[in-house]
Amino acid sequence: MSHPNSTSPKTFASQADLEVKKVSFDQLSPHAYAYTAEGDPNTGIVIGDDAVMVIDTQATPVMAQDVIRRIREVTDKPIKYVLLSHYHAVRVLGASAYRAEGCEQIIASQDTYDLIVERGEQDKASEIGRFPRLFNAVESVPPGLTWPTLTFTGKMTLWLGTLEVQILQLGRGHTKGDTVVWLPQDRVLFSGDLVEFDATPYAGDAYFQDWPATLDRLAALNPAKLVPGRGAALQTPEQVQAGLNGTRAFVSELYESVKAGAAAGLDLNAVYRETYARLAERYGHWVIFAHCMPFDVTRAFDEASGHADPRIWTAERDVAMWKALEGV
Image 1 (cartoon, rainbow, N blue to C red):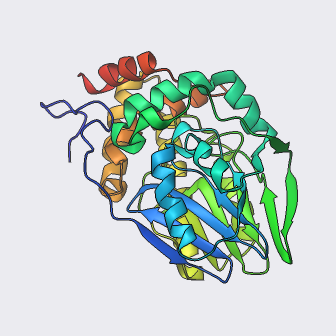
Image 2: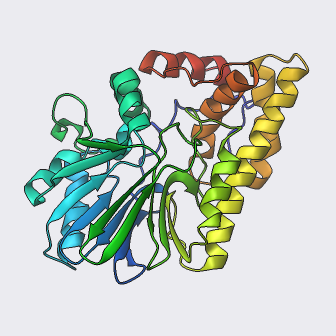
């Protein structure tokens, strides 16, 4: 594992990440499926009596076609709804692929819509630069941004025939617009990036002080199964608890370390080195740990220093931050 103090600098972000991941398509209940890929961004699928909902679209229309192919292996019902768990480009830019499948509405929280207005273009350029492999066939993404056609605040309920689908905004964490999908009849929760499993939470746009309480609200639903934003589908209550606990512990430990360093008057570089070393032993084996840590610590340092809301990441800011912290 490369360390911030190592003599050989790390390649910027995930540009060295070229390994293709194995996809799994798991049925969790009569209505719920999980499309996962060894720590790459997940997609959730809800199949109701008369329609399908897709939760997070993949990063490009070409990548979304693989999701659609697997959906078509189990149902021919129209994909009427696309739900965006948050605004990040890697989650939303595949949305255009679903138009031909009958998509009628792209749903997001109003906070997510506002973030797209505020920083969607910059985030798109930033993410494509960070994750070349995750934007396979990026040329297939149509010009412009993915815009929700239906927004909500707090809670919205859809009925797919007799299946109740609750769309909930339970608090800030990964972003201020985080949205989960809850199937109360099946007790299946789709958490987006509020929960990760054996994958490092990206927290460059996070609200560290809010995130643990938001996870408590997810836990209060008492899900039997959970599809995280990254990592394998959690298929027992024990696995669900492990996913919630692991994410809460990482977020809490990172922020406590950064807050202590900032309070002691240390600069960002020193705080980064200390926090990286402190967390690497327990979490260093998690997917994209080395990639996420500079972004996570930078945001945590901002929050601990009084910047309540995340600053906008641009491709230029990404590289400047990486050079400052990794010496590249």
